[in-house]
Length: 183
Image (cartoon, rainbow, N blue to C red; front, side, top):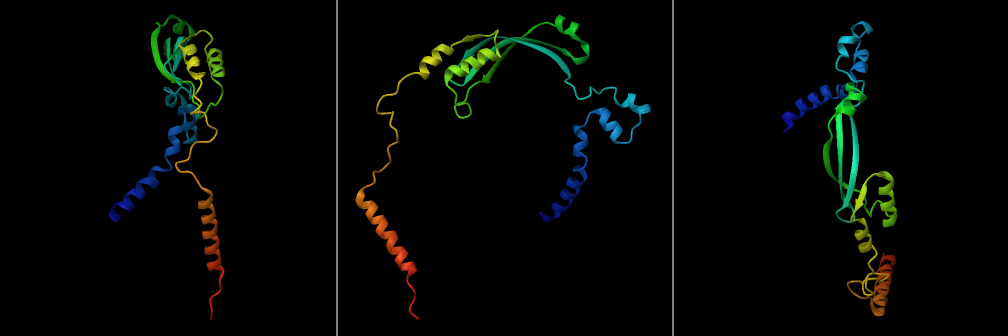
């Protein structure tokens, strides 16, 4: 095991400084590695200056509620390469898209259900919401009185005498620890 440690450390030390160079665009990498404006054209021929490679458009037709936190998003999209322009995007054929999304989580979004549905309507005004009213009725269902306690039931009930015995035991331990030893 020890004989492989030194070669691994050498490889890590050699690759460590090269890691930030992979996060640069071609133009920045060219100038930061000693390139000049005269040689820039060859280096930047395939560079898009950090922009997205595709230009796309998405229209969401409907959101179908699956349960209280996941919905299926139905829609259509079209996409072209970035350099193609707006005219090419408008001529591109539409393709169907179906995707499951998480739109609500009680742990992270503790707002009421009605506000969640309003947020979905604001985010997707053209989309038709399907099945969300049925889910709202499930959310409003009343719990029975046996389930709606302020405090959960403990696995065992404390008694007065158990508490007295615990306090007396702790007092005895404190008294024994506080006693001085006879010399």
